[in-house]
Length: 583
Image 1 (tube, rainbow, N blue to C red):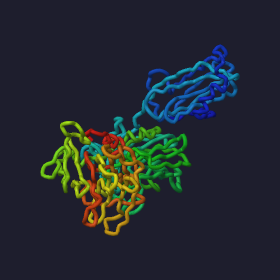
Image 2 (cartoon, rainbow, N blue to C red):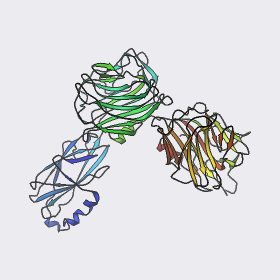
Image 3 (cartoon, rainbow, N blue to C red):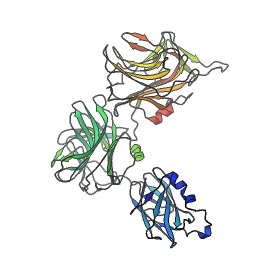
Image 4 (cartoon, helix red, strand yellow):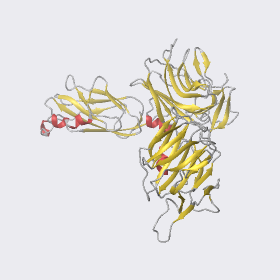
């Protein structure tokens, strides 16, 4: 949200305004107060008419009705909104406020007029309703294979695919996508010009995945003269790695560089993952922001501003008066906005779930040393004296969730699950419920073993009473490890807690959650993931051909996902005594 006086205004902090009424003597009898001001706006009409002004800058006029009005007190409660004192010079004049709402819904403006003697008028309440305008162009790219055109959701501005584009590829959700082969014919050419102004607020978004890490590529751009007016895509850092990027040349003609914001992590293990990108330019402070999968990964200031009115190009961009940066990979849902897109809206554009469950073990029962997977996949293999706790008839104790949970005695008990579909060099998630019976010995909650080292382990260390995430740099006997301690402690028996490990290969982050709350993290700058054996072991560490640090206590709700589970679903996984097969 943005609100500012068109000419000038003195912004006050919340605490300062809280004492302003008393300090200004506003307790004077109402008969001495000035009459209330009048509020009008063509951009934000009062009452119930809904206007599509989210991300747009509009004007609200406040007019004094008393000749002795010295200033106005104005407030629109909401995110990033602070109260204002607006001095009138000369007194009793009208003022125009610029206001930009950043989310859909009703707004309430409170205004008082204050006289030169410090008395305040009755408060005026002005309400208005705002909605968001759809993108000025949106190409889903879901046409069937063989189609000769792709449709814009607005019903016009058809796109023409080049010979290097194949429609009907697997998409980020249920719909299909377009596949680009990286040649000079890998593009979709659209025709309508003047969809947006690049010297005002705008945004561009797309779902993408790339098949070539060795060179820069563009998913969506706007054509100008010699250069693209903006470009959203991939920036290579090496033949096998890079980052996502949003950039604008520093000049319309003869640019000497560009204003660029980049972030995220793209490597061989994560390149085949669908990623949602949003690039946003905010004209108010001339900042460019990049969102990856709904999260801001960077920002920069655009110091030179110019406008272009060309057409949108999908899969390529103009550079040095020639077509360049052809995309090699897949693109879906390319969109452009002629307005600002705030953080919440950018996150909402990434609507497709980016993870798939590959295994879920409830441990409500066991047969011949195995406990079934929920959908009939590979059963969990129970080793040692592993057993299933079942609720007793006297209700003296309860399972962690459902009708039973796994029990390990700390002396050679553990469980293994095979998930060969998980490539640990890419994004994945492991989650479980634990109930520690002993806080006096070191224990491993789970481990992802390789041949010589465990790629990742979540371990409890009794001496420091701490939970740690431990990662190995490589699958070699002498590989170094790196660890991060949880900021939260594990609860003692009989309390149960959720423990979740997420490797987000797109952002390059390892994150450990305890009871649904972020507790520790390690960045990809510190260590790079590698492919383990497609097996997860619960209840022990395994390295050098032997097991150790066996777990003593209860476990339940074991889950493995291909992809990075987000915070919302992690919170749901942390609900105690609840089985959630829908997640």
